[in-house]
Length: 69
Image 1 (cartoon, rainbow, N blue to C red):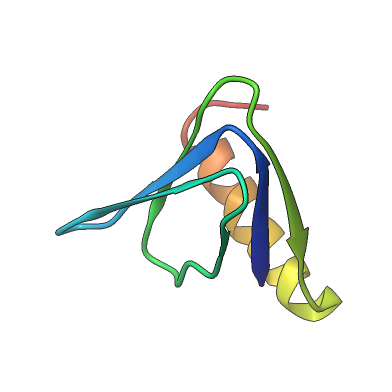
Image 2: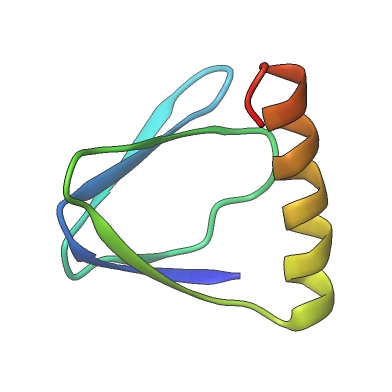
């Protein structure tokens, strides 16, 4: 999956470091991170359908474990 930040910024926290991307940046983030999306940030993601489906499964599982519905 490739992501482009259109507006604002987004960070990803890994076990030993943090990466931040701002408007105009394109990035790929491997598994094993915690995303931090800042207020009014806009991103666009480009992903093959099969990869996106696997990602959504993980996201939904994480949300359910965290008490979100």
